[in-house]
Image (cartoon, rainbow, N blue to C red; front, side, top):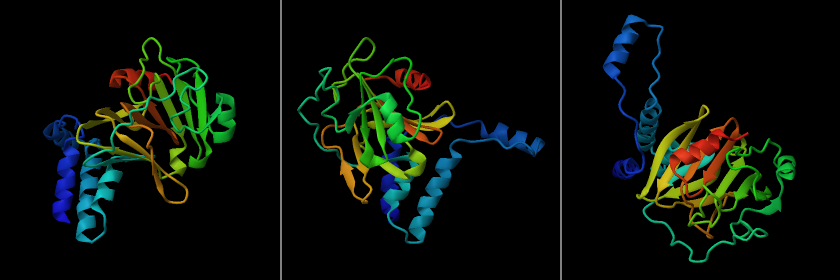
Length: 258
């Protein structure tokens, strides 16, 4: 089990862009001078999670992979490193105005107003992108609302979807694990913060998306792999921003959600 943990941690290091080491000596000196100060070190959560994984091994609590997966997780989303992904489908999703996003398995066609009534939460719309070209709701998943934007200036067609932008929203606080993301060694994972909410930017190679269904089974998305994605918490809502975007562009879209 220890060797398995070491292998998982070594694999994880290839995915995560760690922030620079803070000036620990200066922070400790300041803490000694003023005991009321409690410097916050972002990496402490990662260290504690690693310690928890090692403790799980010592206590015989399987599997180590689950501990590491939850280390890289936010509300309703778990990111898991894997050795390989399924082949990319060769068929291109429908991109016509009438059927935009219809081949992506996003659920039933809806509107923002109807999606709000179905979901029971305020559906946020990115002001930088404007009104969505299509809205879908998957009621079997909690529900999950997806805003679809066709290709346009600044939103080129993504290779995995054929559309310009996907914005997915669901109540992550009530669904401990709803979406799973399986990433290969070529996918980079960068911790980010969006308006105070924790999140991750997944860049590099595409990753696989899967849903945890109410019956306990996992349904992988066999229609496509997911491209560059920003996933983050907004209160009790978890949001995904996916498209042929840079991290800076995705963050700008996320900050414009209203």
